[in-house]
Image (tube, rainbow, N blue to C red):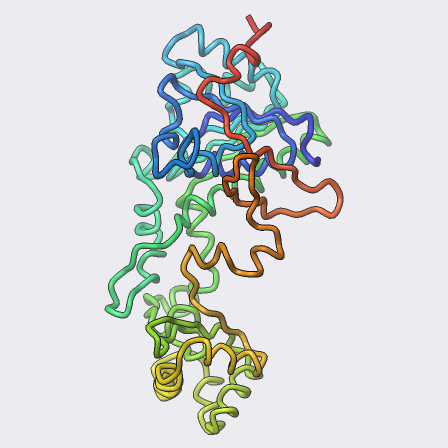
Length: 370
C-alpha cells in the first residue's frame, strides 16, 4: 500500500483529526492513537454494534491504541520518545495545550526535525477566537455557511453532516501529504496548521458572487445552488416522498420543458437564478405532486437529465451504486464499515476493519523506548 512504513502519532479526538488519520491508516500507515486513561470521547458517542460505538470504529479502525496520561512528566517523555520514531504527528487540542503538556511542535521537532506536525482545531493559532471552544455547528454559523442552508421557512437549518469537521480533515490530509512530499526532497518536516473556520470559509467559492461583486448578503432562495433555480431544487411527489432536479445546463432544461410542452419557459431558466423562475418552479412542482415518485423518476430517466430520488440514509445503504462500488465492507463479525473513498489502480487500500480496545497496544509500542 502507498503509505506502508509511515508511522503516525494520532493525539486527536472526536472527528476531524481521526478522520484525517483514518485515511492514512486505510492506505497502510501505522497509526498509533494516543488516548487518555478514560479514552477517546468517541468511544461513548452513539450506538454500539460490537465492542465499541459505531462512531468510534468508523473513525479508528486499523489504528493502535496506547494509553498515556500526559499530565504526568513520565508519559510526556514517553510520547516524545515515540514521536522521535514517527513521520507524522496529529493533534486536535485548543492552541497552547500541547505546549503546556510538553509535546508541542517545537518540543517534538527538537527530537525529530523531520516530523510533519499537524494541528487541527476550530480557529487556528491566532485571531480573536483562538481560545474559544467550538464544534462544527458554531463554525458553520460564524463562517456564514449556516445562513445559506435554509428551510422553506427561511430559517437556518441544522446540517445533515458536520461540514466544518470534514473539510478540515480533508484539508489536513492534503497538507500532511504535501509536507511529506517536500520532506522527500529536503529531509525537513513542517508544521501544518488547519483551522476548521479557515477550511469551511475557503469552501464557499460558488456562493460568494453577491458578496464579492456587490457587497451584499446572498439571498439563498435566489441563488443558483441554494433555492433560486427551478432545475436545482427539491420537489415533493404524490406519495409523500421527494426527488431533486440537479442540473441547470440548457440541454437539461430544454429536454424537460420540451417534454412538458412548455419550451416557452426555457428563457426564464437560461437567464439565471432568481424569482423570475417562479412559473417554472410552479409547473414542475405541480407535475411531480400529481404523480408517485417512481413514475416521475422513470419519466426523467428517459429524458437523460440530472435528477435523483431523495433517499433516506438507510435507503442509501441499499442503493445499487453502493453495492456496485463496494462502498460498504463487512468484517468477520458481519458489521458494516464505510469503504475508503480514495482508490488507486495500483496498491489499493486494504483497511483493517478492527478497532483497537483502549490501551491494547500500550506495552507493544512503548517497549524499548525507556
